[in-house]
Length: 215
Image (cartoon, rainbow, N blue to C red; front, side, top):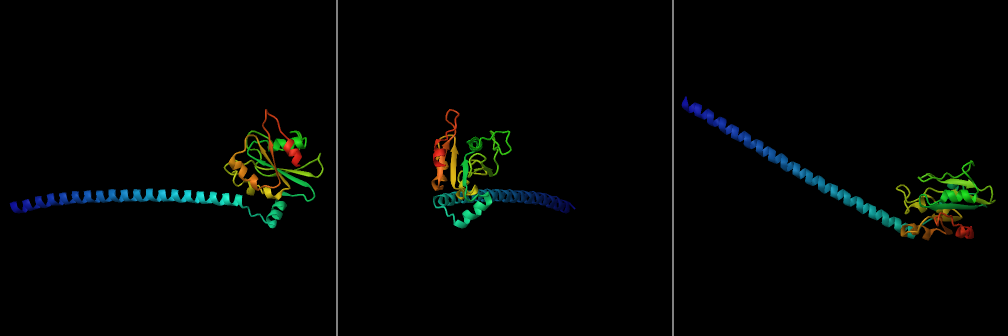
């Protein structure tokens, strides 16, 4: 009887210890598995960041190469001209440049348009021109003016402005800027021909001299 009771107690103690030991082992296993999973996820996240950064660099390098060596075919130009409503026989002139540089204001001034006119080019402090607009000239016969979305935004960067706005389709590109041109701003103009630049911020004045001479 005493032996049986001692055996039962011993077995109970052993089972309890063994169960506790197994529980600790399972806990250690779960913790080790969790650490391994976290390390794997951190490693994968780092690899993904590296991959994205590599793709970004490669994309920028390709774009830089394209800007330095643009491949614009006659078919590209023809398709772009159909898209913009190019008028054969007229002087098709587009205004391009950074956001809020004064492109729309210049088009209004050249055409003597005010906010009371139906064909007034909207202006404002925020991003007003969200897509390209075509403005025939009621004063200067044979001229058609085009307003484009400002570059330097997240959706229209200075790098892709030349292609996204199809600047190669026009007879003349007027680059409007209100400050010193940066290296980034100069990348596209190097490939735009013919091109003229206009400074719109000099003691609050519009400077038309270079624009007149080019047009």
